Length: 215
Length: 249
Image (cartoon, rainbow over all chains, first blue to last red):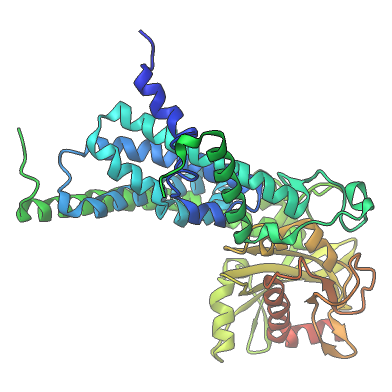
């Protein structure tokens, strides 16, 4: 028996492309704008969200039959906030350096609408294993977009990738800069992320016209 | 067994149980880990102070490399020879100065209350260096750091950190290209404590002029630099009585 059935595989693969939380459902845009000026930050955020969403979906799915529907959103918020704080505290105690990089994202993870969205739309109505896969899939879909945006913003905005200069030195005018190339400071500020997301949405929909909604 | 989850009584019961469970988990975790977390924070502070006085593991092309956590306490005790506090303009010896909360002390100083402002004295190349803690506001949230000066008020090194400045812009105050610019800058302009301002107009990107009380800004759109300039000025104001005594020695 295969570990993942066809349906299970789709739970992971769908959000990566044709049901992507950012480019198709346009969720999680706020954090996608805020932290993608650097590739490293994008990767850290992607990994954190994969962790929180996988675990959060498991917890919510386990509790799905006992959560009162009137306060389900609050219950979901508490679960995600608790998970994030637990992770933050454990990292502070055992991996302090990493926790310093992460601390900025803690608030952003709690308020990430994709997480709440998957709790509400999937984990509340599905079993544990499927919820876990759905969480991982959606977090991966989110992470992939984050990393793509981070790549372009850091490359065009700072001329670096993961902090390493790849286009030369803008002050000493070496590499590409010797030919009059300049970094585009606009790419570092959040509106540039919207433009990159827009381009991604455009590319994706022109490759797959089925995604275009009726006007 | 099906539970009727719509009843008000159940909802209240669920909320109470959830709060108790989550509260205890978090409280248990926080008290269990607090010693380790405090220790990590202490090591970090020691690393930052040593970094500001030039005791670090940087190589010419590396990023920011601190003294490793495992050995930082020994190194700190070896290199920081004296610790003082400045109280109402009077310098007092205090071996525990480095445990003081700079944020609280500076706030007390600004509101005119009695404050204990820590000072760390170390040695670098046979000369005494004086490390002053700094605390201020960036664009979004707190910024802080340490600055070491020699007796001629020439900056020997700085360390900056921040809570939540813009990634790729203001957040870069903790990168070497920015912090290294402060080395060798003089804090004096004539006889006044002018500090070192982060300037967008000084037309000195390579920072060759060390007497202009200015370093080059990160970018034209970065406001965090104003916070850094203000923070240095505030620090000099607070520590002026002590700096005067060093200069006159």
